[in-house]
Length: 110
Image (cartoon, rainbow, N blue to C red; front, side, top):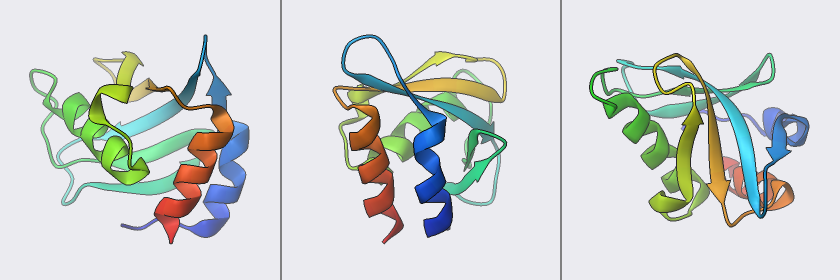
């Protein structure tokens, strides 16, 4: 996975706290890519590429699975809450604070 340490340090500014114990991340998703990967932060959005096509929610499901696997959290904790039909989305990671998600992203980098 391509993910640069410098972008992880900048990530805290782009991870918001939602209602209750959840973190919200704005994502720019590129479907039908050559591979599934998180490429880093750009313009306040986490850049993610998935191989799945944007048909019948397959790209969104691949996004949720990739983020869950990368962070080491259960898949049911990650969900797309807005932008389901567009490239820019907001995802939540339930049960984790902003700082915990930042730490998980840092561990995913190593």
